[in-house]
Image 1 (cartoon, rainbow, N blue to C red):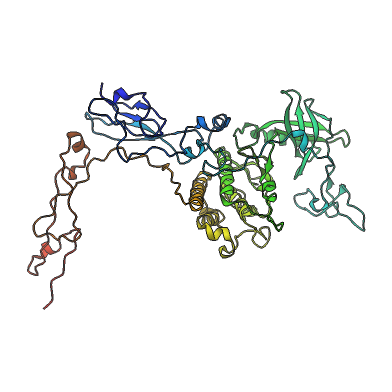
Image 2 (image 1 turned 135 degrees about the vertical axis):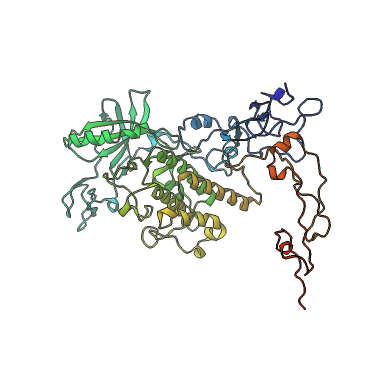
Length: 558
């Protein structure tokens, strides 16, 4: 057994690397974390790391030291960009050993690994500390007097959208009635009341908020451990066949499992005793915390004006949101309506909470939902796409990081002049990321959520470096560490009449082993003689035209 083979299953000797050595075959042993071979002393024992060899940084502790619960959330991810403490990268290393080639799998830490496995919370990529948002008591968030302000009352007919239920002649607006423009019925009165039992299982506790499809209710699931759930209207229709078709069409939402996406438990129907209509509801996981809109509005300066979020905090939210969108895209789904209202921070985690606008990529018939100021300009004509989803994330980052006045009208599909925005002046890379993600041409935006997330993580590292004065580099996700340098002295020293322009003292030539000689291309196996050029005007044309990496002086003219 070779000296390196004896190192199998032993802990890696590199400082702060928590990997172990694995036998990759042919007597080769490498660490399954840093990808480096052990240093073997002459006596056959593992020696200390050579001078200059560094391991992962201080923030690269294993995920086992992270906050309790992070590992369970990480294991729930079924696709997208993995959050595990290490990522296996299959690398092909060809070697002419014993006349055959070998292939081994090298495990290297990804750029996001050291961030997540640090002592910081998961939200913030391990680079910044994001203030946690504790989960409130669900019973305490129920609205005592659920009412929709008149300024938010509009016709639910997609082809109309006219204001309804407004005050006239000093009289308050009606909460129920018919649109005066198209005749479509409207109602802003909650259909469910505290104590109602939906589907014989869900006991309503009260209203949480009002959305585009009606009221959102908090309920207790009496059939499953009295857990808190959310009921949200699915379709505003009394047509039983249409309801059944709508529920069957949306069943795919229950198959989505991701720690950054609210979980869909069930689809149920409930007969409204007051109107006799059959209403459909989505039963979802209850996510307590604050939405990005609430977090942003809570920040106020001394003069009472809204204080934008720090750019590093917004970047942390964006990275989490992109991971969730990337998971949906991998399942051929589009989110369509990402904005500050539809993401909630709970503890150190961000979750997308509204799945009402999710649609399949090949769906050309369903209604398209979106929000003015966030939706990409091409959606109205071409429909939603991966590029339009990424557009909404960039617009959300802009709304969070500066006082974006006019983002729903003047700048509905553009960004303000960077000379007038302080955050753009200080962090140019952040501005460039937003410019690319909101390019009018979808083909010029990022190609995927992962690509945009990688770039946003790079922006976050730069922002933190600027603020702290300390660089925050990361290992490449494409290239592993250099395992072996075969030889650097490829050319023989210059002699004779060759030009010495730019010449350096050659390194001492060492004798190559037979193994190293086999790894070199054939043309480099033998020493290469330098090309000598004569500066004499009488030199033959063939010599004067010979190629050379060294420039020579031209002959003087007479």
